[in-house]
Image (cartoon, rainbow, N blue to C red; front, side):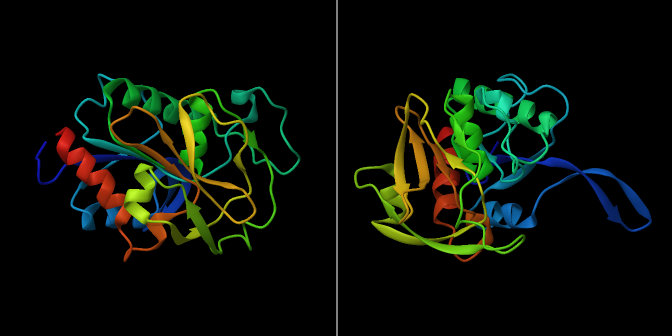
Length: 230
């Protein structure tokens, strides 16, 4: 672990993947996460949803990103599935809940991205709206949303009063978990960011900052917190 190049773990997912001569199951991650961590001054470490993640097994990390992806199993927050909720990916749910638990135990800096913010909320006892309109223009197309950031929050220090973000989601936070506070909202009231009171750095955003390699503010803030931890 180096103070100049902190190790930033990033959750990944298992998908059937084709490359070269192969068509196999692989641990995959959108490259933007890796590029953003590197450009922000960190070294990325991909964390697949296999094995067991505990405070002991992630103790080598300096920071953590819970990446975006599939819907969380509604059973994890005591709900029946909505007709538009995706098929459960329990391997990833289990792995990322374990990563969040371990990271909070270690007071590890955490950035939750889209699904990652939802994982953070559910892991701490919150719930989700399983379907909302207007934040997913088309499959694979990121929509632009202007968000308002709450003054006096860590996110406000990073992004200021207002900023534009890229969104691609059909679920959102409903009941906010104890200890989390809302730090940004979209014009329609959708929760766009949360942070954990009393933590070194635990921030969740509903948007996808990894889609803008030129705006590294969130990743730089994470890496800076990780560098101080290291």
